[in-house]
Amino acid sequence: MDAKLLLLPFPSPPAALHHHPPAPKSLFLGASLPLLHPPSPLRLLRPRGPRLAVVAQAAVKRRKEIPFDNVIQRDKKLKLVLKLRNILVSNPDRVMSLRDLGRFRRDLGLTRKRRLIALLKRFPGVFEIVEEGVYSLRFRLTPAADRLYLDELHLKNESEGLAVTKLRKLLMMSQDKRILIEKIAHLKHDLGLPPEFRDTICLRYPQYFRLVQMDRGPGLELTHWDPELAVSAAEVAEEENRAREEQERNLIIDRPLKFNRVKLPQGLKLSRGEARRVAQFKEMPYISPYSDFSHLRSGSAEKEKHACSVVHEILSLTLEKRTLVDHLTHFREEFRFSQSLRGMLIRHPDMFYVSLKGDRDSVFLREAYKNSQLVEKSKLVLLKEKMRALVAVPRFPRRGVPATSAESEGTNGTAQMLREGSDVEDDEDEGLSDMEDLISEMSGGKSDADYHWGDGWVGENDDSPPDFEDGDDSSLKEVKVTMKNTANSANRKAHVPVFPDGKPRERW
Image (cartoon, rainbow, N blue to C red; front, side):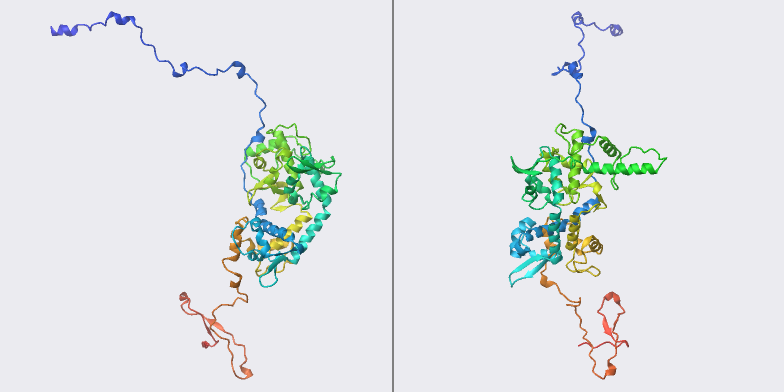
């Protein structure tokens, strides 16, 4: 019976359960989410605006180049000396007391009380100390430095016509043909303008300039447009290169075809992508800095092409073909420069180089330099190099270095002193903006009384007296004194003076 029960089928479920359909499967979670803004077919087919060129927005890695950084490095001391000279020449007879110089500590970057006489003695070729009484010390320029200062003033007066031309070209490049006087003052030393250019050349040439009152102060306006001056330095160089290539083409008959490749300056290393973007930017048509740029849209490749032309022309007008980046940023409104002017200069390493040396960044015109030296030097630049040679004159000249400042004038004297290892270039890695470190290095924690003058033997312990022999004249013979070396040199015992026969000398 148990076996029959095991063979019975399982009881069937109730009939009411068969009327319910099976539960549906769960749907995809995202299918039930409503779209807030469904894309319309018209929006998808809307034409996009013109995209900016890649060359205008491309990021180029900045690479450090030592030849250009050395130009900033070697002018650190010269910049300090020129500050001191400008303070000195503002006094009558170009003589000033050290007590009056102490009022300019903040202008010179001095925050703690230090001895200014140590700073002036650091540059014996430029400044000399004059004692007038016990407690009155004055300083003035040396005859060589004073002569260079007068030559610089005379040369600036002679080159007044060139300064007027540079000022006219600067106004011709601006948008409204007027610039604030205070903005032009930032470039007066770089352009070679006289110190008081507003009261001199701006008033002497009313046919070119006119002083106007602007919203933020007095400004200078251009009154005459000269089409002969509206030729940039880049256009002149392009004409010269084209004439040179024409002569070479006439000399060589069966010359192979030249590929259109970018000629990068020597020492400039770019990646393949950067070189391609530089080539694309060069292939764009040239936009003159003297043309009307009011229709150019900000951020476009054409506007950046025009901005590069303006910066190139401004650097061509400067004496040393370089200036501070901050000086260019003052002209954003006049030339419609972008807010990231420094980034724009870095994006074009084939034309400019931005140096981070010094307190503020500097921009160089690359084509004007060769191995950290200017290709073409004006007379004012040659005078500056002579002044740099006077700054490099050491306080204690070493053997082989010319002691007088007249022998060290000129560029050859500067290079020779630097090659000889002048002690003024030992702190090149330290910025002269921190004047406390400079004066601490000069003084060395000692006063001037700690220095001993003589032939090098002052202060040494020499117990051996001179030999005064009594006798006839036959005993006045030349006796050579030699130093007997001890057997055990490792103990470093004192040397005992002996006579030629080996007998030790007497000691007093």
